Length: 436
Image (cartoon, rainbow, N blue to C red):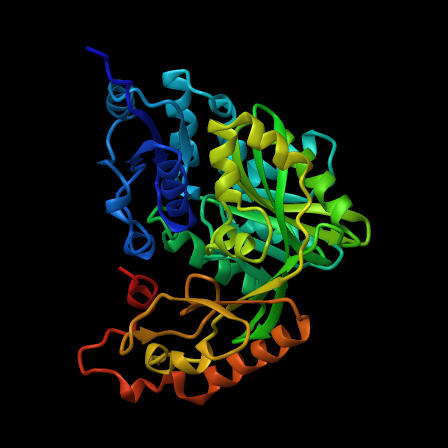
């Protein structure tokens, strides 16, 4: 009797957000995929978890227990699916001797302050910063800057959640209090605040994948911000860039050096970089896929898929090597338009979505609310009602369709508070956690 070959098995730590794209990529390559929970998911991210994509879903438990289960199933590699899974993936790979990043330096890839300091130690430009639980230290730091303007953020969050710009003592105190009194989007307690100097420039995304230290840049984007709802840098749209962009080479080179400085030798990275008059400076880096289905949209527009190249990095060395020299034709471009509610109210976007679906460049809509759900004034990505992806070869069409989306938002998509059901909870806590 011929003995059947053992099933190939891999694991994703926290297959939520864009990490949910990885299960399909590895399944297509003949792998059974196991999900590992670093913690029990808050409702804010739980909506993006698809249990049917995994043969097992290992609950949050002690590291050694999860490692034993994965060893028993012969797992070949373990990858972080979302920001919250970075630490646990590194520790599990180290425990099982699987290919991964150095577990001794996991904090450089997870804590906002530590990652910027690791970049600085590598001799690369980076913003000045401190980390502290004492607002007096934050005030003293800001006072020592010529412009007195700072960014305050949690150490371990994501999606611009609880990120504030402040230029007065009152605003710094308020931001500090909000960060320390609330949990991250993953439900973690904030015990200290990362305080960085505010740096001017244009902000870019450079997405990469590494295989044993070799790096592929899969796609690049530019963030466009708007001064809305009292937030001076609210995410407005994200624009896909061609590989021959005038600053592309400079950004690629800097991002690859940052990835190396952070010890990301295996798997994806999402680098956010400010291009200043003095050159690139890191904002922060996620040792995981880009969020908001960015890999899917990049691939649809003719670029490489960061999720697919990640699967190649672990399963197909020849395909990964080919990706290192490939330059996409970039015959289409893409906008990811972040929806913005101007006030607290009620969402009615689904019933009106056909108006947007008729736009020439419409590709996809990811709405995080159902009709009738409460919606709050958008102040970050977490409080956005969702996004709409536009793809088209003519940039002028994208500009026109983007403007149509903003007009659509102002035409009754967000009902007034009086339109809510009698039992609707419009508290900020409820609004931030209504995506279960």
